[in-house]
Image 1: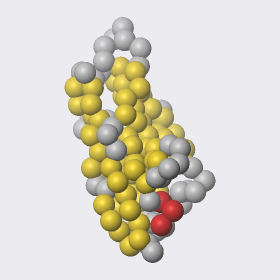
Image 2: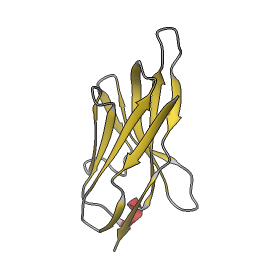
Image 3: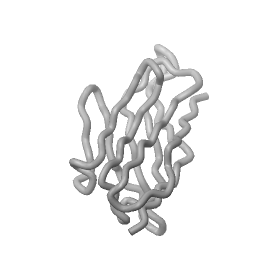
Length: 120
């Protein structure tokens, strides 16, 4: 079984920074796409940033402010969030496509989420 666990959320003032971390554990052979989503209260979950095969993609709303990075040896993905705005307030979820064996198709996994609150 594979688990994703996020950390690093919290309360920060507008203009501040936070760094989210996500660690994968369990039976892992390869980690393919890894990314971050967020879900504001009462709204749909949306993609924030994705790292795939050496390339990265960002939602327009966070371009230039957020940076995704990953350390495959540590089985971790990070989200550095700078110049935070109140509209960035949401539960942030780690997401990853992970293969557990040489003959296994990648499966998609979600973390439990970490709350980020940005005060004005």
